[in-house]
Length: 288
Length: 324
Image 1 (cartoon, rainbow over the protein chains, first blue to last red):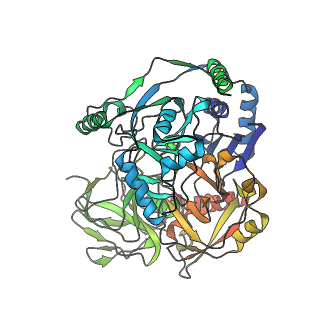
Image 2: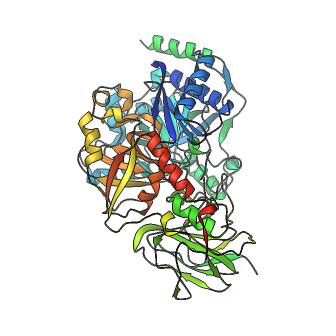
Image 3: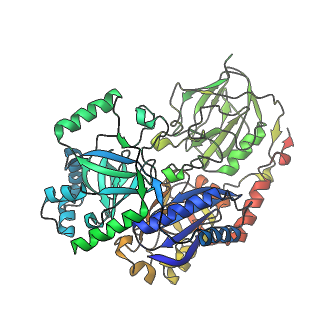
C-alpha cells in the first residue's frame, strides 16, 4: 500500500531513505521508478546517487552542498507535482532466460548447506509445501508461467529483483537463516515474493530452484550483449524463464565458453501500464 | 624510461583506490569502493603534490614491496607498516623523493590496519565505470596487486618536499579502544528504546571476519519494537528483515542478531534493517581498527557530523603542509 505521504529516514550524514509504501507490488515499484526519474531529471545540486528499490529509494547527497531538510523538500515538491497516477507507457525489453530447473549445481549447493543444517527442508520441497504445489513439475510450470518485472538491481553487481507480473503466478519463499556462504553463479533463487538470478558466486539467502547457463553479468565484457554494460538487466525490463533440458543447457554453456552466445532480447515492445493493471486485475478475479 | 611501479611482493591485499569512488552505479549493484580511510589517503596525495582525490594505493594489514621504475615523489600515511627505502626506514607523513630502481618495503601494521602510498602523478590504471577504485571481490577496476604486476604512474612536474604537521594527522591510539561517532537511523524505530540506549553504552568487539565489505561486531542481543514484530509478511519472517531497500555507507546493518557495519565494498541494497549509521567523518576509524579491538559508539546528530567533517576537511588541504 502507498503511504499517504513520503516518509524520510536519514541514513547518517550523507544518505536519505525515501519510503513510498509498504509492500512488494508492481504499483508501488512503478511509482518509485517514476519519482526517481523525476528526481534525476531535476538535477538537484549536491545530489550524488540514487538507488531505486522495491518500495523506497535511497538518495546519496553531499551535505556541504545541500541540507537534509532542503533535499527532502525538493523531493516532496517533485512528488506533489508528479501525482500518484499509475498510467502511461514505457519501452520495456523482454529478455528470455533459459533455466534447467532442479539442476545438479544448485542441488549440490542445497545438500552442502543441509550437512550443517539437516533440519532444513530441501528448497523445492519447501516452496511446494508453502505454496500448495503438488510437486516439482508444478513448481516449474508456475515459475515459468509469467513474465517478471525487473523491480530493482543491487546487493551485488547485476543482481536483479524480479516481481511476477501475473499475480496468480506469485510464489512466496522464506529466506535462508543463517544465509549460505556460497551460491553457484547462475543459480535462480526465490525469496519473499521475488526471484533473483545470481550474477556471480556470492553468499546468498534465496531458496534455489534451478540454474541458467546464460550470464547476467560479464565483468570482462567478453560476450556481445555486454558491450555497453557489465550487467544484463535494467530496471523496467521484463524477464521470462524458459525451461530447458540438458542438451540445450549444454549447448548454451558451450556457446558462452566460446564467446558467441547471444541473449534472447526483444527490444521493440512498449509496456502499457494501464492495460497491464487491467489485465492483472482480471487474472486475479478469474482465479477466485 | 617508463613511469611505472613494479610489484615485487603484493602484501596482504593492496588495491588501487580513488575518490570519490564509483559514483552513479550503485543502482546496478556496484559498491562505491574508494579508500576506506579517506583522511590518510588525501594526506598522502597532497604530500606528493597531487589533487587530494587522485588514485593511490591502499595497503591492508601487511604492505607490499615495490620497485620504482622512474624518479618520483612518494608519501606513506595511515597505519605504520615500517616503510623502508632500500632497507633504510623512511618517515611517514612526509614527501620522500625516490630514484629509478629503488625499492620500498612495507611490513605488518604496527598500529592501525591500512596504510596509503601516494606517488606524484598518481596511479594511472584504466578507469572502469568512471573510476580507478578497485572492488577486489568482483574484480571491478582490477584486483589486489599480484607479484610482477606493473602499475602505470601519471606525469608530474612537482619536486617540493613537505611534512604534515603532527597535529593534523589522524591519531591511531594504542589502547585498542575506538570512540566512533554514529547517528540514529534510518531504521532505529524498528528497535525498542532500551536497545538504542544499549547500542551507545556497549563495548562492541570487532570480529576477525571483517573486511572492506563489513565490520562484524560481537555484543549483546537486540530487542525490537512493534514495527519490527508486527509487520506485513512481505518484509520477511525475522524481526530484522525489511523489504529490500538501499544500504547507506556506514550503516550498522542488523542481520538476525549480528550487527555488521557496511563499508566501502558493502552491498548497495538488501533485506535487513539499518538502525544506526556511522558519521562519515568517523569512517577512517573503522579502517584503522583491527579485529578484536573495541568500538564504543557516541551519538551525534547531523550538526555534530558536519562539525567533524569540517575538521577533517581542513586537515586534508595543501595549505596545512609545512616545507621539509
